[in-house]
Length: 254
Image 1 (cartoon, rainbow, N blue to C red):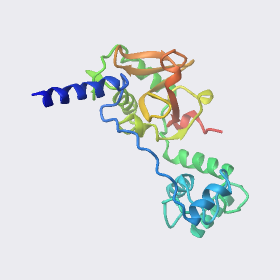
Image 2 (image 1 turned 90 degrees about the vertical axis):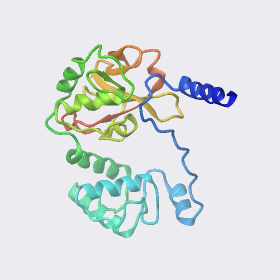
Image 3 (image 1 turned 90 degrees about the horizontal axis):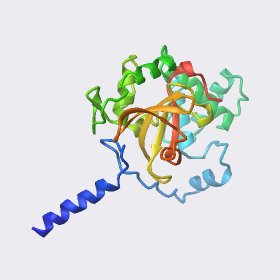
Image 4 (image 1 turned 180 degrees about the horizontal axis):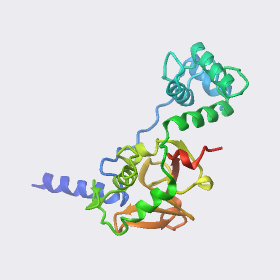
């Protein structure tokens, strides 16, 4: 009997500490693994934080390799190992985009690669103003845990539904939506960009919404349903995590 009561109390305590707008299928943030102590790994971390070349490894190399593939370049792997093949494909990309063909992944090359890939991967033919107009139509719709329809939305279900009304597909959860498109700083936000929040600085994304302009965003609040809030609000400001641009019409990030 006491074991059952203890189990129920434990479950209640776990639920009580989650943020109000936590996703229906929110995943527990994983602690990043420590870098390997191989000679290659050491080279990657001690050489430079902004430029990568043959022999280096890292997540930035992996992203660059993935974007090269998106653009039709043939790289031998997308695991983040900077190979001679990766360098040769980077040279081709650099020449095509009038960048010094060093074959190295510097910040200028990385940002250009992200921008060019965004033109191909991003959502085309949809304006931010139209997304915001559609988002506003559902004001007052109640919050529903796991909800994906106008009968009730959770935060990512709402974002996904609004974009789908414009035949634009986004993933289902806030943490994966936070990986779509390209990163954009708060000062560069435009209507229709996606904004994300976290319970703490060390946790992953737990809430998301649609930037509406003038420092405001549409989202599904667990207490008031679909509503317009301010990024400078005393609750949301310290929880701001990041933003992503998924609409090609909003332009490249420089």
